[in-house]
Image (cartoon, rainbow, N blue to C red; front, side, top):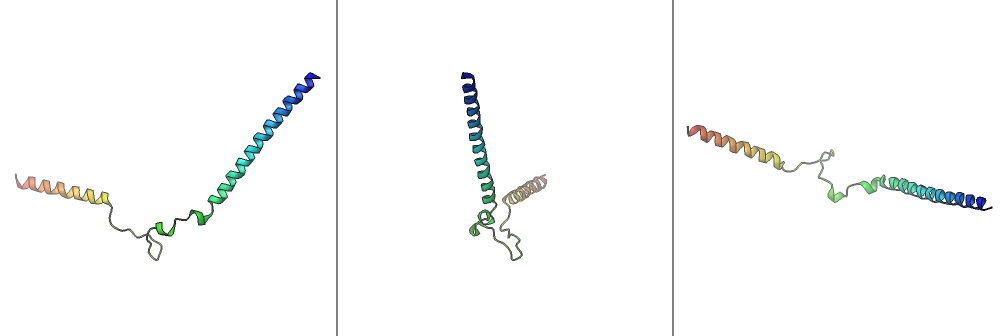
Length: 91
């Protein structure tokens, strides 16, 4: 009788562990799917109106100002050219 009791308790413990683990896995899967559906809602993923860049009537973005890196490179080239010009004149 002890053998049957121990086997029954072992199988019961295995069944309990499997059912609890399966239930947790199923709950997490449902939560993940619900999050995917919620994140796919376009009204929640849109950039707020106040943060959108300015656009032309055609929908093209309006670029204002210039790139600082381009200005720095251009300024560096001008400085080097002026230096070279002054070096050549002083010769």
